[in-house]
Image 1 (cartoon, rainbow, N blue to C red):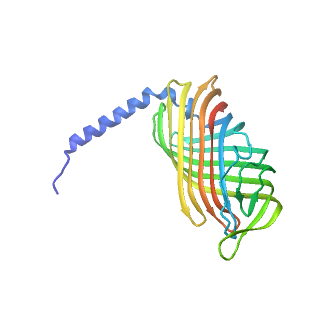
Image 2 (tube, helix red, strand yellow):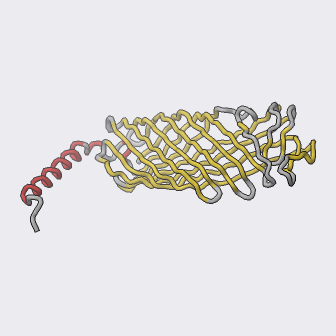
Image 3 (cartoon, helix red, strand yellow):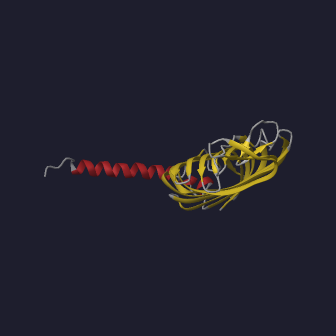
Length: 293
């Protein structure tokens, strides 16, 4: 078989490549063990989150619900400061684990003003007091593999699980509505008190990218984006999570930083006890303290 590559030339090229990579590693040796390359990094952030929450719930009897905004219609606060907890563990410069947790809970009440709005099988009465609540707990666990990490810059992929627990409550008075045999909506009780209380958990596998860059051994930035689209069984929709931060080591083990976090859900659900659509975004700036070892 004819040789397509001259062996001495290939050997020289390989030796030169190894020498070049070695020189890069030596040049960036000072960055290993500092900044984003430490084994453990614990971050506690203040997350000033702006939220947008909209749901539509259909009844099992065929009543098609109307979309409700928890912020505009139920008067839940758009802004709330909450804690955000993150841990990063690096086995070595190539492999790491990321864990995040954030819990957002809000309740409020308002006088209902929208005519003909139905949730499940209740049509809310104009002028009545409607009380609402919404809670989300988000757990993020991701394994990261870095294709590039020379101590100063990093680029890798993320593979993990993003689990969100949602709790929804709407309480007030209205008309109880059913769909008759001809497909018409019929009021069967014009003064019905009703509490709609539903919770569900969304466990989703996630794919993503992560990257870091150290300006100096003490100052670095890091960011990641994870996404997933789903069309399976009772769920159809998408989830996007992204975050970026700039961190500074005050000492060898402690530092401060600031960043931005973004979560976005867009789901259609078809379950026995829950039918409808759900869109939920929360995002905002973060300020944090961290310990790294």
